[in-house]
Length: 387
Image (spheres, rainbow, N blue to C red):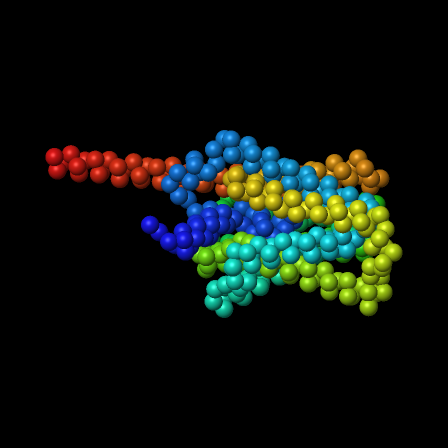
């Protein structure tokens, strides 16, 4: 009869294996859906993987969770901006709570805070730093430009990730990348609407602040791309990666950046949080609304486990559509034709890459089935020959 220690040890190993299996191919655990570093990357092709994991019922729930997460995050960020509260100020309560929750879980599981060799620890630092920087830059950009413009430019990370992978991993560029890249660049131009090309009022109103916001949005997308590639490298070098530990490290990195921001605003700009502002209904409501983003993180992780990563990225671009709808219905700043066209082009570029990835993966699965059928026939012929 097995001892109690053996049973407990076996149960812990099973839980560790389950978490390892559920490790996402992308660092979804880092950012809310609208600015998560989710991208379309190569998923290992295994026998029966798609048929077992992505059945119709599971895909339907994955699509539902994806759209729900996008809608909740967009509504949350939009509501906080309309309340007149800085998103970085409103995030303080959320990340204090989220850091405590993730730390408690890591300690309960007795996981080490840092794992692996020096290279893996460095990748963990880089992964969490770029994830925190992406969130920080994106939310600063929302101060100066509309949420729809920030979301559109930030979502170009999907294309940049594929493009940078070509140079870093020396991959051969596919036709989808060659088509999607110029479409993305054209979409960025239509959204940014530089003054030397466009004479609309969008370019002239608060020109410097708008340029700053758009630049931060693009920098956020490049930071998110670095985050994705770093996470891919971390997953490849560490087979024993724990998503909960990475999540805790990320929360600590974001919380530190938020505290540094408060220190800078208080002692340098003299515009930090005051007791009267903290007790105001606007800040309290914004902080409570911001807690919904924790639920968004949970929903997006559920969606990623249930949905094909390419489909997830395609549906995730609904962030852009939701932000455009909210902006044009509830604010006086309506998107012009060029901005709408730019957003459409960015979404179209994501669709091109996503559909190409799905077609390539289906083709790979068909080849594997043919190889397996050939091996089965050879084994059968050998057995008949022996008989």
